[in-house]
Length: 88
Image (tube, helix red, strand yellow):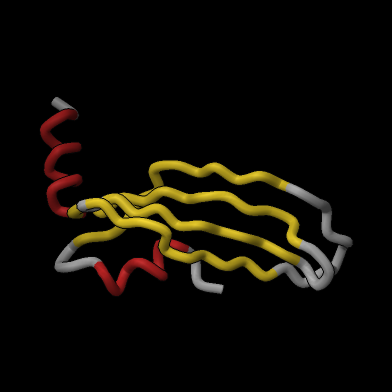
């Protein structure tokens, strides 16, 4: 399973990356030790530079969690420059 950062990276341009902005997950059930867990993320919406992904996780027999993850596109160069200016 590819994490959200890597899944969204092909949609970024230049020095852009995505960063997490929110996580809203409900844990629904426990999985036994050694169980294989499969996680999936589906793009639910995109608004400007903000992504919302619908996520689910399940083991071999049941769904163990679900919810949403928010991410935003940022320019690494602009972010680093802003941090340099704020550190004075």
